[in-house]
Length: 483
Image (cartoon, rainbow, N blue to C red; front, top):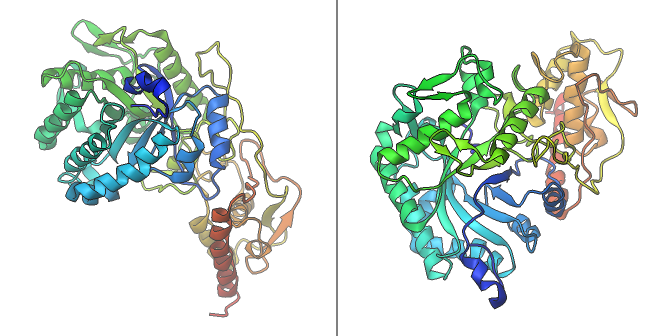
């Protein structure tokens, strides 16, 4: 989700499989990497396989992640970030270099790359047209580079679009059309997709509809029927997912592209950071979605057609921007450490439940908390909390969040511990000018989880932590009045 969302064959024996399209229908998952302490890529790939995911969507072509997917049998959609669109649009050579380094190389190593998503929600209105002139040329250049590399029949080029690129003036799905200000551009892109057999990838977020509109009917966001359905001719829409999906189907048909496949690139529900973001609602939505997909019933405008969707997302990301809301860091079906947040049957309600990540190594069972005798009226407390929450994740604090029941001292302790764990439990990160102390007694309370960080496992993590510890030292000196 944006903040304002051919397979790999290495032997002639399986050459025939190289011409296969991505699997139609079923659930994939988005693997985001905006974490201060990401799990090792090999651990995440094992997590995907243990839970039966056979498709994954990536937001960037990270070498370590693609390398870990080698030989996994997992189909991959690789993303290209928006900040690369200008270079790729302006230079065929740049596109060829990107394809060589990020597609050809990994396919030759046995990574099953099926799709390249050029840009991530580039036409969001909040971007004020920044990527309107570069997205489609970048798509064309990447496609040409794939063709030149002999991969044009194996790897399809698309773009991950926010659902705001289509709309219905009447609110009825059958009146769907593309947004007026980009109508011509959208038709060019859809023609491009149709000519190559690539899917239209749209990100659909019923939660955002609920978050943005206090009058949005809550039950219409889920799949168990609604007291406020949308009646469209002879069709009654009981949930916003089907209505949104069919608005796009209608837009494609209206403009002469009835056969372009729709893939829902991101869909999910957060578990924290807002009154409507909680594990119960997340499970209700995601299980309803999975059951809906597994039923094979399709949607009213596409009955019986497989629904192709990628859950958003796999794990929480504590480094995501919270510009839209604090919930942005809590979309995962797993916590940061690969532990399931709630029971979810990925093969339907009667299927097996989520399996946690294996072999995760943690730091010591030690937490940083406010000293019992500390005075909350001390200006240093407020300054310290501001710094801690500016450097670490405090989005579980607030009204009707998982830590909403903490008292004032509990809030301070949560902030201190969040920073302390982010800094790999460096002693200097639990001082705050004498206000804090460490404890081996877990301060978690009710639904509020005081985390223990993941142990550093790579040179990359170690390098990052050198900078982090430097920041901790500077902060300590700042509080001590040295500067």
